[in-house]
Image 1: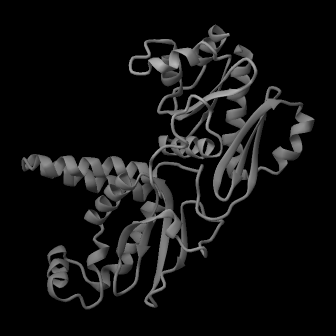
Image 2 (image 1 turned 180 degrees about the vertical axis):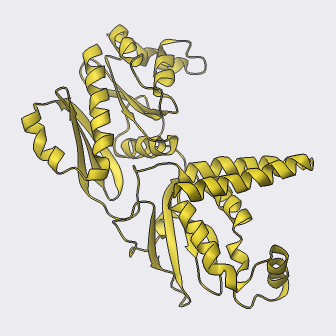
Image 3 (image 1 turned 135 degrees about the vertical axis):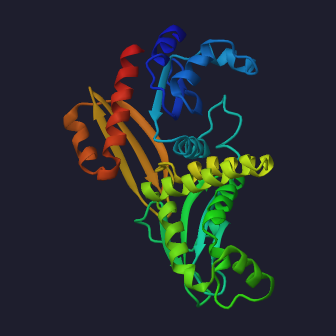
Length: 325
């Protein structure tokens, strides 16, 4: 059985994603995520190195299933939610250890700025139809706060926020800043009149506007290179970490969203139906099985347009892997 699964592994794409191993009875043995599905999954049939405990599991693998994702962040979320609902025997943790956080963009006149908050602190009034950002009252009577995310990894997201604040110093653009705050604002060359533009620039990046993301990355790259030329290598290293973190929060990610979205996302190809269940803004389930197109059509018709390519592509992958089994 394992030889057929090993052959199927070589058919996987070299993209980020989540993989699942089943035994001959169809029981899920393990769920994992990868930066490169093909490289990661084929490694199970090589030198397990620091994973010798998996050798017994590999001998039982009869089938490989996989979902290709748009980014490592999307794969991380999908693995997490799948494991939270059901933890196979060979998985050691139920969904990873990263903290779920959001970014809060405060545009108020008294305390503007970008901060990291726990995902469960986001107000319930956040608009459910928005994917990467949503607006809710800040509660301070002086403006609104916009929430973005959710993201995995508090440390990484704090680095992204620090990098964005480095180039868009919104926190120094309060009205009538005095004392040390006023001195720092003057040093940065900003005041209350800059607040709207700085907030707009930050929002565009966090809404994943391509031009805005590229501009932010270019600005940070210039700061990093200038620090390196000045032999300020510790600062250059810090900014490089901020660049990597910026990519983490701006890369495509659909597996977890703000709001209470509910949908069944389906794709069909070559006799294989794949269905993802979205509950409370998270992709909570993934099932696949052979099906006639006529039986699949009601689910396909109900799939939201923005999910159709994702579902169809993964149905095509599922059909290809099924043929190798």
